[in-house]
Image 1: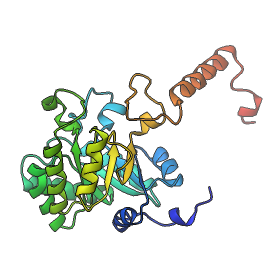
Image 2 (image 1 turned 90 degrees about the vertical axis):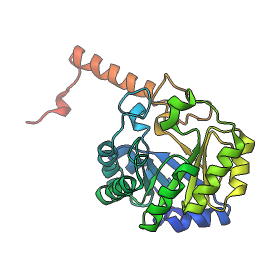
Image 3 (image 1 turned 90 degrees about the horizontal axis):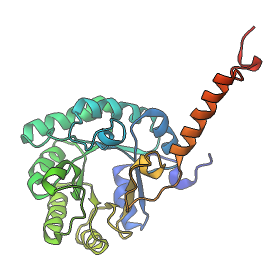
Amino acid sequence: MTRDVETSRPFTLTDFARARSGNRKIVMVTAYDHPTARCLDAAGIDCLLVGDSLGMVVHGKPDSLAVTVEDMIYHGKMVRAAAQRAMVVVDMPFMSYQISEEEALRNAGRILRETGAHAIKLEGGVTRAPTVARMVDAGIPVMGHVGLTPQSVRRLGGFKVQRDAEAILADAKALEEAGAFAIVIECVPEELGHRVTSAVGIPTIGIGAGPRCDGQVLVLHDLLGLDETVKPRFSRRYAELAGTIREAAKNFASDVRSGSFPGPEHGFQ
């Protein structure tokens, strides 16, 4: 593909900050493997998030709680190896940063060291701010996550829109003060997404938080229509690949059974 000037060099932490001041929307998509990450990178996506959502969309679990640090490192390595321009952020999974600041720092350092990623992401605000500050002080770039925090899905009673404006605003401000370079805002009313964005000086990335955030993120499988059973309200499908894959597999099976594949052109003499 032909790259324009805007997508001709690596996207960095500095670009996150400049995007807000320059009124340029940040584009983020989740990625979990090398070939898909390579395609997203070539498409000019700014940031690839190796999300713990892989527990659901890759591992087939009902939530992300079973994902381990080892899982994140495994998938993070593949994505980072494919990314030539995009910034790579890796989620810290459930219970990898909640037990103690020391363990959180150790796990974050291990994820960056073993994957080569550029930053980590963790959920929570006021209660996690001291941990974020420790990481930032150690040189680890941290992206925050407020609103619907999927690792707390059982406490929250499911994947629901979060409406406690004061708590969410306090969380966002605490993350900024702790040194986070950006914040994901998930599943909040549109006006609240705008209030949070206006209240902090760092970029916000929305997912179900309205159009007035500084950028947007989607889960790859939602964007591509790879899962026909889940259609989040906040997502837009840009393809329907589940049907395409199913049809291709059916055609392959039919050709094998009929004897039309492989043909003479597929063999060696």
